Length: 507
Ligand SMILES: Cc1cc2nc3c(=O)[nH]c(=O)nc-3n(C[C@H](O)[C@H](O)[C@H](O)COP(=O)(O)OP(=O)(O)OC[C@H]3O[C@@H](n4cnc5c(N)ncnc54)[C@H](O)[C@@H]3O)c2cc1C
Image (cartoon, rainbow, N blue to C red; front, side, top):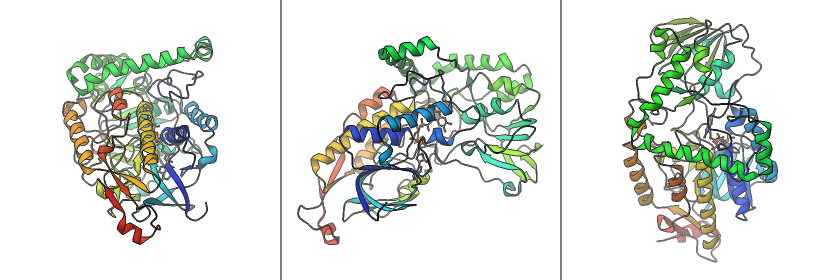
């Protein structure tokens, strides 16, 4: 990268969000863009999470781009390798490779008020961009809790999202920390080979059976020959999930039926009443993410697996100590403890128009307009920003809605000309978030009696969308200019500090 190369758009990240943004920009006729990716290949989540058993928990025909259908998904819930291969295929099919800069970690971004552009410092040099699309993902920076004594543990330690494939788990005593979506896939996958698995569970999850099966040859043939059958399948999967939303967002009492299915899923495999008691959640289903597995409970019933109903508190040499005092000897500790979701590391690396970082602007909680733009950060847009997460459906639906918004944003900017930027009005952000938080009050995430990673340090749910994906699609169809200030540099003015002083906000 040459010093201070300038592009119209810099996209950060090459997961579903970043690659989707790249496809959409090209479709909008924007070709002057780069995709900056810190890793050495594309794929985001599906590159980083290669742990045994890793798979999606939303059916593949819905968990993929509508504009890039894959008739050849091998399973209803495809595994990590197939999803990763799909994203590589998207990068090739849509000819994105020439835009992608691998091994380019974004270290810092600063809004240049004089030039109305972003200065982006990467691990391979600096560039500038009129617009930044931040698609760094809400689940991309692993979180390992601070545990006294962990640094002195003589065995192997790693996070589920950074699996060490060189470490052989055969015959090892493994302490698995956490019972989230990754842990419940890992335990059944490693139980057959490990000498012993001790699962440290702070809170038991609700687990529904996963209707996973191979997609038959004739089905795939049909989807290849008659693409509308794949689209119909996707439509059905989408519709079923849309119908479930009101139970999560308005009528949590209706979730009782699903609780009974989850209890049956457990009692089928867990015959020991004491273990069943440990594994039975005391909060309403849906309050934390509902997990899908038909292998988790059978694995927990195996003689080489123990469940400690307490979190990890301390490590003393090779002894792993739970908060309730239970001590376990371990050769390896695997953290399935999630990600920095409400304290996004990228927010520390963005300095906006007022000279403060996004992390400082969000010190009381993440806030944006329509999950995309943040007050004080002109021409900066997030894909899967605040309150865009889903409890029961495919994040690709939300990503595609945000791509529509991005397209609308670029169209508005093009009309305004190169010497203009859009700065979202704080009042618009405030109004949007008041509506979102009002709706949040009635949701199971707020009233279900649990503490989850959906909530920030202040107990506010700044991660999930409290509505249907259809509602979000409608809310992001167009960019409403009334929600933005247009910041302009006078025509004919040299791009200089002097120009900045005369840069005006057109209200
Ligand atoms: C194990 C697992 C399973 C999941 N299963 C599902 C599922 O079944 N259904 C569902 O809807 N969702 C699922 N999700 C959520 C998933 O994260 C999203 O669906 C989606 O993949 C997010 O895509 P993204 O592009 O926004 O982020 P990511 O895929 O996380 O990509 C972000 C990219 O940004 C890069 N990046 C980050 N910081 C920088 C930086 N400073 N500089 C340069 N590059 C940077 C990262 O390296 C990464 O490549 C799952 C998540 C995990 C972790």
